Amino acid sequence: MFELEEKIYFYVLIAIPVLVVAFLMLSIWRKKKQKQFADHRLLQRLTPEKSVFKLVFKVVLWSLAIACFAIGLVNPKFGTKLETVKREGVDIVFAVDVSKSMLAEDIAPNRIEKSKQLVTQIINNLASDRIGIIAYAGQAYPQLPITTDYAAAKMFLQNMNTDMLSSQGTAISDAIEMATTYFNDEEQTNRILVIISDGEDHSDNAVSAASLAAEKGIKIFTIGVGKPEGGPIPIKRNGIIESYKKDKHGETVITKLNETVLREIATTTNGFYLNGSNTQQVVDEVKKRLLAMDKKEFETKQYTDFDHQFQWFLGFGLFFLFIDVLVSEKKTKWIKQLNLFNENK
Image 1 (cartoon, rainbow, N blue to C red):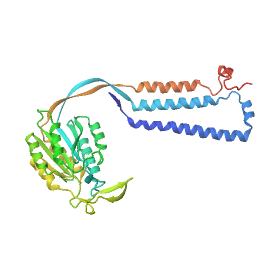
Image 2: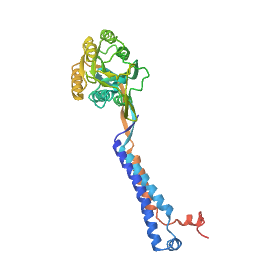
Image 3: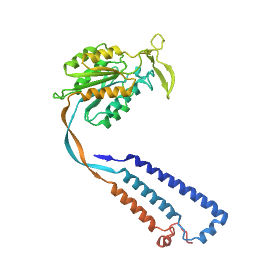
Image 4: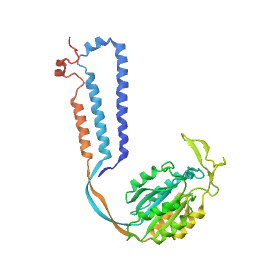
């Protein structure tokens, strides 16, 4: 297991291009001043021991030293011991609607981005619960199986968009049915499915699917994104709205938040519905509900012992600086004797 402890120190690497640019500007300035002072051939005779190669070499040494110090500050670590750790929590599956109606901008910045914000903030407030992710439109597709890796969950979440699924429409029933396959632990007493959607359901089987989920001990929390009055679905090119989606009659399609369906789905499983307009209220309510539930103890494997590697990079950095001190700006005699570039005629 490889881990970077303080990634912010990678910004120190900016010093390398700054150093190179400063060296080039100084070299250009020196040449201009030298031309004003004397002819180039005369200067070579006056300073025969001066080595341009060594000046460049010293800049390379400083660049390597800075790179090593930056990586040392980041502190790369390698996991050396894999242990089984016991944790307590609830299994939570997030089903995120990625249909085209989620592009509507009746809620800022748009419904799909708001959904991702909501799920991300909920995950940030979890402790030891296991989570999974499903994306659905006309069909449901698994994105991430039940896991305790929150970083991976948020990475998958950020990559979700309305173009990821070819089948369009909104089949909430498919998402519910797929979620039932995620909960394969028979001992888990609390199984939660969180559906984030605008409530448009083109399958008409969502409530029936919710009833079957309830029989398997699954509670459904539904979060509505959008506004009841709705909004058009923009068609963009390079981030600029070109037009709005139209129906077969040429009328602009207005997609509306259907809270009735979402409430009915939640009620069927003894869950609850929340309007997603206020992110903090949603996070607080979900957190409160989860804390009130019984937690199941489960086992997970994780790296517990890490070997710090920063000392190697700090050592190499000091080594490059030490070499820089030893290297003078004059030509080395034995290299000069080789006459590699035919300097001595």
